[in-house]
Length: 163
Image (cartoon, rainbow, N blue to C red; front, side, top):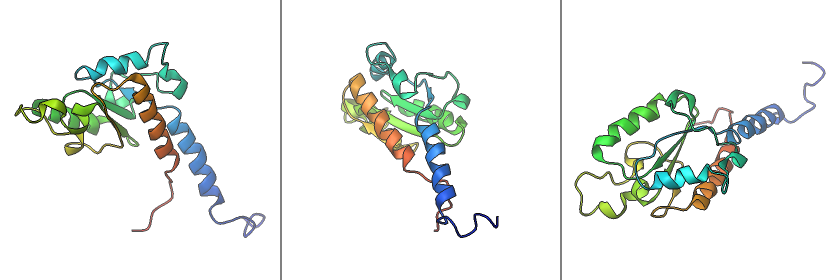
């Protein structure tokens, strides 16, 4: 350590590690397939050649939550489904991210006032990183939400935060 001691800023190693780790995490998101209603069709359309979610490194939709790091909650969440949503979220390995896609996943949608069985947003059960409004949102909106999530991931640090 004598050669590099006091020659660099004290954060240069953490900053470089942050850059490469966050670059890898942001550009290789693997979403778990969790489509509940009409928004799932728009999510599937995003994977087709016209919109091509593969440009962002998120084309590998995983059937198992243990292989995924991104959950795209798309559609109406009923109270019966809320426990399964939480279970799938808990089965995902750390570091994990959540996107709520559509009015129903964000706030309950048009069903929230006249239905007793609809959850008033995914954030009541699991933490949500990015909200994508719309009923149903277009594939372009999902890609925009994915870019916003990538920007959030690139800002994170692995250094210990003081409380």
